[in-house]
Image (cartoon, rainbow, N blue to C red):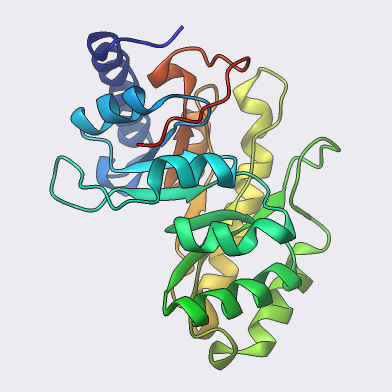
Length: 252
């Protein structure tokens, strides 16, 4: 069931307390971790409520749903522009639409997708932030680059150089923690991601902006923050349970 505005406010306060405590334990500033509100399958009213509570960044799994909710520019409570993050896998035939609606795509995992996004963004005159998804937990049900292929993939991007991608900003890496119900089980894959991100960020060049780690959700955000996450993705804990039986087709 969707939370009311007051319920969302209460749950946000509880979540913020967890994030702040995790940052304190990790010796980090609270400002170093961005909260991405995962609004997939939640209706327009829920998005409006989140913006009223100060949300600035929203995550959507499906491109069609992102278009319905975020095609029109929106202003956050702090005066900044609301940002749309596409966090789910994007089919090749949806990349153009994803590039147009999104401010950041977290789930890129092929050279072909990178090349297509560059062409689309060039035609749109747009600079797009992208992250590469790594299947750090090596789970068959998860999307993303294989851990054993990730470094060679990034080396290939580096070899092409800055001039090959003037309309793309490579911002970092994304992963999904292990689906075991035990947060600590994800520490190793989060640490792997951090080490890989730092290695390539240090190279500069095409990776000059490679300072982001999108990892951690409701159940494992503390471990993710301890391991360096800069973006956590939280949905149900903020919005309430999703109703998957109803298509979300009400544009914001």
